[in-house]
Image 1 (spheres, rainbow, N blue to C red):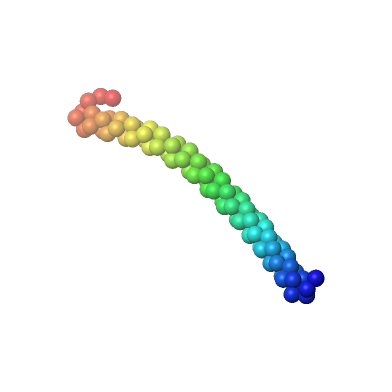
Image 2 (cartoon, rainbow, N blue to C red):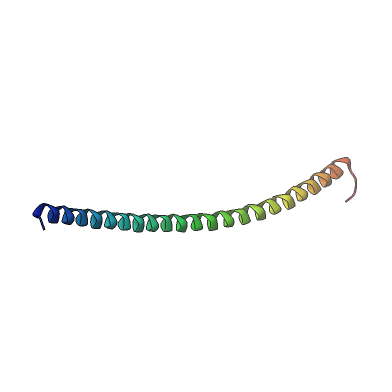
Length: 85
């Protein structure tokens, strides 16, 4: 075989191996990054769910306190008018 053909074939082979290696490495890195982002999203979702639960309980607590304030205001109004308890 002619030396030019052998060199061309070796160059082609090197190019193919290099390109394939780059694609595989890039795919692995992309997969790793996506996995890390999924973990972050899962952590943030868990924190958000916990926050939703806390807000729900706080809203319930505020509703109870609002009712207690209304009762106290009525009692104060009754006392100011001189009505017995």
